[in-house]
Amino acid sequence: MIFDAVIVGGGPSGSTCAWKLVQAGLTCLVLDKAVFPRTKLCAGWITPAVVEDLEIDLGAYPHRLLTFDRIHFRFPLIGFKPCTVQHSIRRYEFDAWLLARAGAEVRQHNVRSIRQQDGLYIIDDTYRGKYLIGAGGTRCPVYRSLFKARSPRAKALQAVTLEVEFPCHYDDDSCHLWFFEHGLPGYSWYVPKADGYLNVGIGAMAARLKYRGEDIRNHWLQFSDKLRRTGIVKDRPPDPKGYSYFIRGEERPVRIDNAFILGDAAGLATRDLCEGIGPAVRSGLIAADCIVNGQSYRLDQIDGYSGSSWLGRKLFEHGLHH
Ligand SMILES: Cc1cc2nc3c(=O)[nH]c(=O)nc-3n(C[C@H](O)[C@H](O)[C@H](O)COP(=O)(O)OP(=O)(O)OC[C@H]3O[C@@H](n4cnc5c(N)ncnc54)[C@H](O)[C@@H]3O)c2cc1C
Image (cartoon, rainbow, N blue to C red):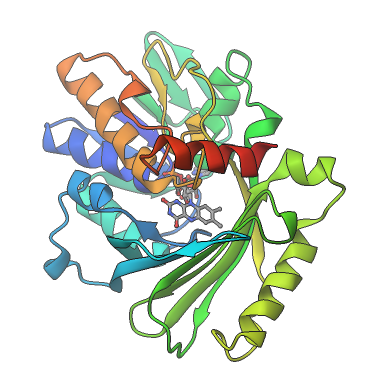
């Protein structure tokens, strides 16, 4: 069978694109190397814009969802707690729910090779599609095969992370972010989830850490000690796992012929908070619109920052990159 679109990766970018293509009546196959529900390292913070873009009725969402009305921001000399409305979900549940909701055909398959023949994309000599969507995250095979040579990623834009999500009876159900502690070119977080899960982690710009001769694992040890010392977490958190991804740089090709890259495959996470779910979802919507309505696939409608103030942006840029 020839599909209208083959989507590589069933995370938020791929499932959003599939959802909109299926709604428009196109045949769509999602290939993912993992079986869903699958673990995705992520703090699972989602903004109201994500809820709106995905048309989620919060009352009807069937899994863990916690809403915060405050986030505690702490910098070396100052802290503040702005009023806000933000949410946390567990990616293990959220991604599987989004993918099932999309209504596309899903196959578990680790994509290795991609070639073009007679106007079609042929994946591993097995799957055929008129459009090819690269939504495979940092190590997306569509990016690697078709885009990497034209659109290499800058090392300076790579963020490294360590995090763990675990069952925990926490007392404090608000979100905490600590910026630039012990000179970290990044921040650490405490993000509670509904019904007794907690996510804690640390993220930083890889090139800045390397320049300073530092290892993110030492920053993690200081952070996990602090969580225990201050009593916000009673026991030392379990050992974390690591992952890296790329934040937004200058505009680069994101469409070649009928192949597109979305989300982390295109390096769309925001420059200040490294928020990637919102940009992934938005790029999925834009790509689907482009295929269905012949719009151009332009990602300049996706903000490269999570924060809105000019001063905030400059402060973050200084702390992360200098
Ligand atoms: C520790 C950490 C914390 C984060 N916290 C937040 C947060 O709180 N809020 C936020 O907005 N963003 C956060 N992010 C960023 C966010 O997780 C990503 O930006 C987002 O998941 C990108 O979505 P995506 O659909 O592009 O890719 P992904 O969610 O990575 O999905 C890619 C999919 O492609 C599949 N795949 C990969 N290779 C292949 C292959 N060869 N064949 C088939 N399938 C393949 C994978 O199995 C995966 O399911 C965090 C990231 C990290 C690492």
